[in-house]
Length: 454
Image 1 (cartoon, rainbow, N blue to C red):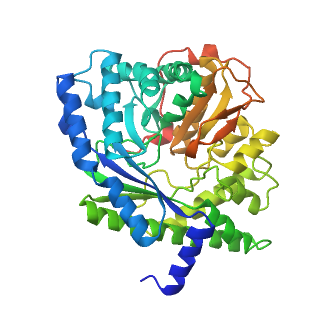
Image 2: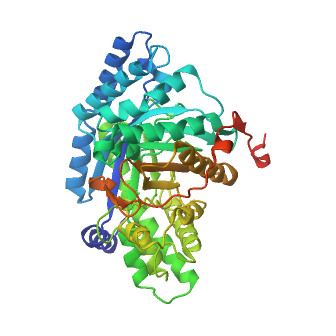
Image 3: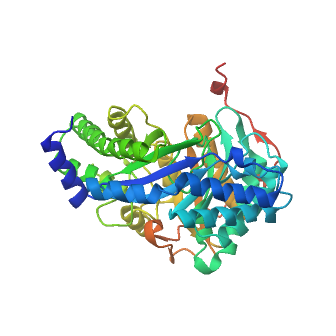
């Protein structure tokens, strides 16, 4: 039972330390919508989304009002569209028509993002996969709230380098298609290794084929709460530091568990998982980088950053696992540059570089996230950065991702503005050393030896 002291403590977290439930994401299977006729397919997709998620936003708002817990986003994830549209789509434009349908349906139910305009190509690319991937620039430029992801590698299958090379070009084309808006289309596009089926966070969410027909996944967040807790143990040893993070993560997850239980009961939709990720925002006091500084770093990116992030990530998971039996998604600590005021400051001053961020991704939840780079960056260089990040995920048996934004028309020293939770970011320098000969090879990088466990 939650006692009165815990209630007061939770209220303080919400009012002064930016504690929130970052998202309620309803996963919806579209497998029963599959049809060989594109018009009928789109009609069935729209009907399924409206029927399944029609009460999602209202329910979230009711729970938020009744319990006093901010629920920032209500979202939808769907079955990877490359699978759903394979029988009906004969061209990239056909897939774009599905994207428009998803955008309209999501707007009708009132959610802020819909994820699942996705393809899973870690071992090979089908004709439908290729058409969907080629359609991404147009789809993301013509829709507002549709998000896309492509899984190009896994520990079990290796890395499909043909897909990696293709995504280097697709990211650049997406940037060009939305150049008038600081290339914001790329902020809605993620390239994954080891993508989870139950991730509630955008832009990488999709509803995996092993999931139920409908499911609710909750994403909790509270960087400000963790930082405030660590202020009370300044100068203490690592045992005290770790225990403080762990206990705080437990309390944050309890809030998510409450919301998950209520939403599941009211909507009549099974509860899936709670994602424990500490997801920052550009708001003051809501920064993962500030947590690292509270641990004793002068700024994020300096010596000790990777160790501090590893500690934070591990203790968040340990605390959250004790608060819920169903923890999943990504879970840990996000390090998106544009969405974290402390990371933005570190990047501006040069303390945080792309190379340091890559090292940090070995121990964080995801990877190179919301990083603005020069618009002149070659697509082969983008592909090389993707390949490096996919290798980290494959070898370390963890999810890694890349969300790079080559901002067309802007160079190092300038700034990109994305707005809202997506924030703003300085354009970070990228190595000018070329990798064309490597990324232009065909085929796959094989799975590592430790992947064979059958």
